[in-house]
Length: 211
Image 1 (cartoon, rainbow, N blue to C red):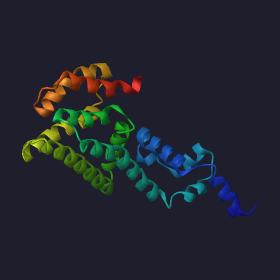
Image 2 (cartoon, rainbow, N blue to C red):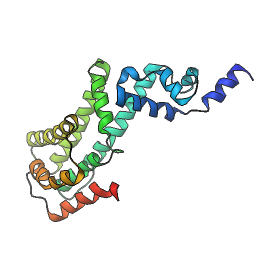
Image 3 (tube, rainbow, N blue to C red):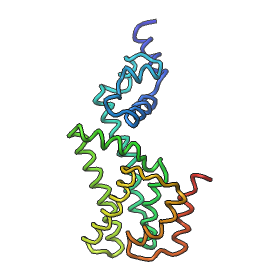
Image 4 (cartoon, rainbow, N blue to C red):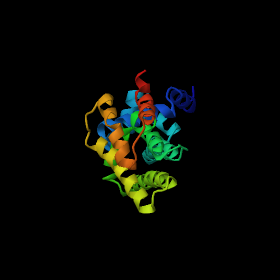
């Protein structure tokens, strides 16, 4: 077997998704300094050279980690903020869905990327852009329901900063306790009184993952 054929066979034992999955896990658990090709190769039981079947360099892997973060944590939030809804309360509930489903927003990954950004101006710029895109989507959501530009911006900031702070402070609440406050949150964020139907809609998606 030629060296090229052997490398090709070995590369076939792992996939790009395998490398990304292990890199994400290392980033979340230990930080960007522990996202190392040699360590991941050992975990995958492949040679270090197989990495280059999927990535040009470690910097390429870093860029793809950021792309994954943007796709997982920013895309769904923007999509839900833009969803049609009969009232602003129901629109806010659409955004709340991101906070209860890790496939729509991964808080551990978000915190890991923010820690990474403290050490890299490039990553910091990406994080700031993502925050501005998220805030713009939520601000536009409020404006669609008649809020003034300034009121929409401040309400969006309160909603978004509250949630980011919730994760950063690692507030320890079970879903039942957290949902018990949902009416007050909706009232505070919108300035309107949620209906019983609103609360029920919120409860259904909050607890659907446990069903």
